[in-house]
Image (cartoon, rainbow, N blue to C red; front, top):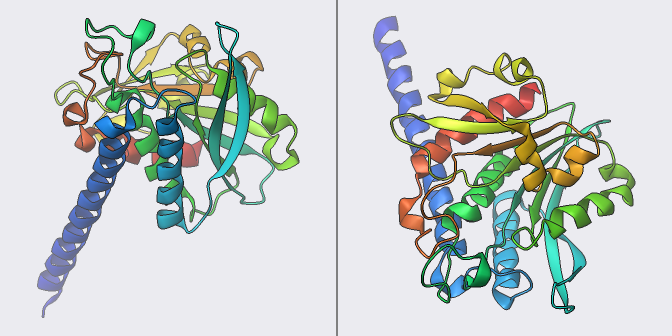
Length: 293
């Protein structure tokens, strides 16, 4: 076999392996989104049995993919009607014995059967929340799969929040929890995902709300190389998301989203509308960005 033929063989072989890996990751995204946004989960309302079932499913994925364990943090919520709700955040800490930690988070709860949070006329039916925020959970789990084996001068803390939809209670509780855990204290950057499953096939625009200088995001990683266009949105929106408590503590925060759409908080936010191909592009971009932060 001459050199040219051998090189061509290696090129084709490498391309084939990449295609297999990409297909596997796309199927992984589908598994997460379709499971969390199935009708049987009844919208994953905070403190519901289905929310517990959702976190158990996330734990099973962590165990299967990383051989690790999803730890939980319980917290209580004083509801507006004076009742007390109990819920849980899930987290995985990748300890690279570094001085600094990057927190990567996404909320896993949704609005259940809708009620007053619904934007649908039929507000007493299942609101599956495929994009909001099963997509964010799937993206975080894919990054966890890759970063668990990467040598880094940062630790990684992956968090799956509850209590988001009714008032950002989970992220607030987790920020307090981190202060009581010595190895979780040194959080230097927070990256959050909220609705990342609707990347437009033509525009391919990924929005980023950031408290960092724009050039610190854009110069380190060429988004165009990953087939994306980054749009920097108002950093004030960080105070409407699970970044709020960290942002107000002065910790640099980034939130990524493909944007609001007509199915937001509606009965039509279903898995069939999720672009898993788009999520693959976003994940590849973020893997590069996170390791260069």
